[in-house]
Length: 334
Ligand code: KG4
Ligand code: ZN
Image (cartoon, rainbow, N blue to C red; front, side, top):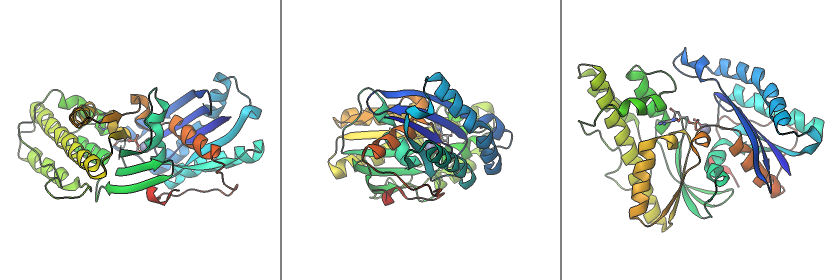
């Protein structure tokens, strides 16, 4: 069965078609980053308006490129949350309208479940059970995954998400939006001369906190000469602190649960140093690590089409009522 996937939770319009036996057929992504860059961050109202402009033409293009007609599509999956309400509503309303017109089932997908399952689109997908570290702009979650829909939350950020910490630090250093990728490029020109804190690693538990690290970074920056080299050194020290903190917590989660598989997904999983630190730890632990390909670390329609396809295959689907939830804990899924 061909499943159309729609992602509009934040600043990218993503559409994709996944086939239950042939795998990913096609996907297209339109990123709004250039538009939001002017404002230094995502402007929710502009994001919604742009999804309205782009979504239907993108679906048409996707169907045309895939040489599929509406009668070929067997189900529609869309991101129903968490995310920006206006942006989510564009995807939800479009998905429900198409489902009604085409007389096919639709399924609401949790955005973080989409990220969590993104490595399933790769050649050697992980088998359940595993630990998932989900590091995006809005969330930092450590989850024990028994099966699709069986998610036990082991830890989460008590304040800023990892991606948010990258974005705020990048802003402080005068880099544009989104800051994560830009900060990591600058970090390559620097060296971590000052050791930044590894928050909440010296006490038990699997929760995260990045706001203290943000303040430490701000103070270090204010006490520096603010030269290009100072900024690069701060970027390097900050990135190393985040990478090591995430690694310590993942190691702890594996040891506590006795599991030997780690899935890492969400925008920050595209970060080279984060990938390197985690991979090195996994080797020492004699475990295995799974990442999505780089383009599927950040938001995309393919992960939503995949997650929806799995849920539709399990005979799950919803009524035509438009459903969107800006806040939606992953542990509520089943
Ligand atoms: O998963 P995602 O595309 O959207 C959300 O669901 O939030 O994640 C976006 C976040 C942003 O905070 C962005 O700065 C960060 O992921 N990010 C990175 C990198 N690429 C994206 N952070 C660090 N290094 C990167 N290479
Ligand atoms: Zn995301």
